[in-house]
Length: 157
Image (cartoon, rainbow, N blue to C red; front, side, top):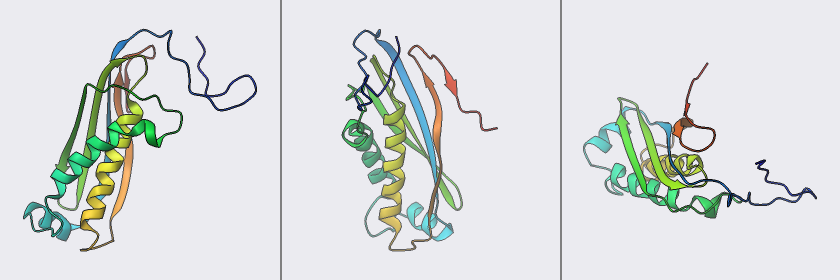
């Protein structure tokens, strides 16, 4: 089976995955927001005026992953089984992880990457009144499993 986002005339199309086998698929994406110490302190003290930054970011990331096919033009709408957003908070930054899984005919990498991006953007939005001097960086697929291509693990060389 050859998959392409173009038909024989060069028109953009959604790939037909109807002949593929259903498999369990999981993807983990990661991204970082560098905020500085003041914002991290205020998040930890729960003193950001807009509310609980990490809780709101978690919900936003989950919602973003669910809406991926509405944002990425040729992405298949998927029935997702699980979405989690996790945080690692450091002195001047926060790492965000989005894990997505399902059983289906196509992978969930785009959903994990979208979820992590929306979660990061939500942190920025909730903290920008304190400082706009934040950087969203290091967004990448950490790992994926399932499907014909099998396992993948990030290897920054």
